[in-house]
Amino acid sequence: MSSEIETPLVGLHARHGHPLAYRVSDAAGLAEQTGVVLVNLRLDPASRALRDAVRAGLGLDLPLQANTVTQGQGVMALWLAPDEWLLRAEEPQGDALAARVEQALAGHWFAVTDQTSGYSVVQLHGPEAMNVLNAGCPLDLHPRTLGAGRCAQSHFFKAGVLLRPLGDRGDAWELIVRRSFADYTVRMLMDAMQD
Image (cartoon, rainbow, N blue to C red; front, side, top):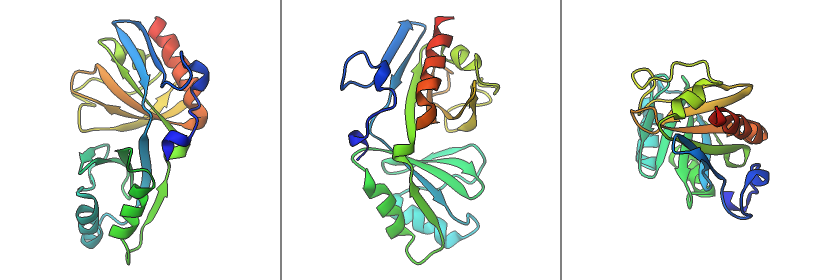
């Protein structure tokens, strides 16, 4: 599914048909993540029946604490609000992830929306990755504040981003950004990497 969608970063690709990969030095690099499936889920977290249905259908416990992430069977849930999560999976889940959610929660009140085509995913890595993000993000990104198993919604310069550290050292991050802001965000990351 998402492999059929042309990336908004196509103008920055070094070679046609290859995901964006950019590195200034060993200090920091970035890479576009293709094939990521994103599904927005809304439901009442107070309902044990709903939480149990998600667990049974996806092998996943929804995170109930703000700004946390849980991992299940090939899918993770990122907390967005008290009653909202972003489910993230890799292809070949495709349309199947939203369908799995619908099947698991049939007969309950919930909302599920495939967001795959509306977002781009970029990973930033290297010993200076945190400093690159600090150039345009006001959050305290230190691992003791925002470490593995956590996520945060913020902005990078003028673009809203969902940040997820990929470890506890501050040297690897995932940024999920609206497709319409992807080119801007990546160009600002590249500019910050030059410094």
